[in-house]
Amino acid sequence: MSNNSVTSMSTLYNVAMVTVDNLPNDMLIISDIFSKIAEMHINIDMITQSPPYQGKLNVSFSMPQENIAKVIGLLNTYKGTVPNLRISIDSESTKISIFGEAMKEVPGVAARLFRLLAVNDAEVKLVTTSEVDISFLIYDKDTDRVASAIKKEFLI
Image (cartoon, rainbow, N blue to C red; front, side):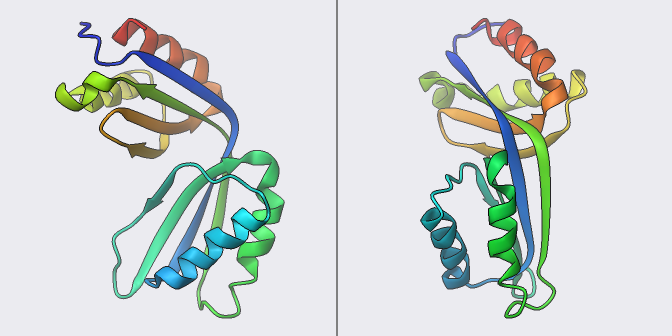
């Protein structure tokens, strides 16, 4: 079933996902973290945040795997001022993005993509979207299978 809603796909290898749990719902702290990462010349890509609950939230983001040690070192400096701060790293990931200008007018593209991921037994670690693209992080081992299935499903 093609409706040309998806016109291209990109794949980025060697991506890590960092999750910071129990952050205070304070944009100054969160902006400080991202500012310091930027000062280290590390590019952050996908960012998601959980809804605040009892004044705390969780933030996950993707970045080049090669910078894990630097980011862990930085985040550990916040443990003295942020009680119960937890940091987890999930590496060996690939980011796949699908794009299409028509996606904003075609319902069900995400549903088709999520079904495709389920049928191909691909665990999704992180998802971000806009009107014209969907990006998701999966295990490296699933990349070829998922990329082939996306090309077949959306005929790109």
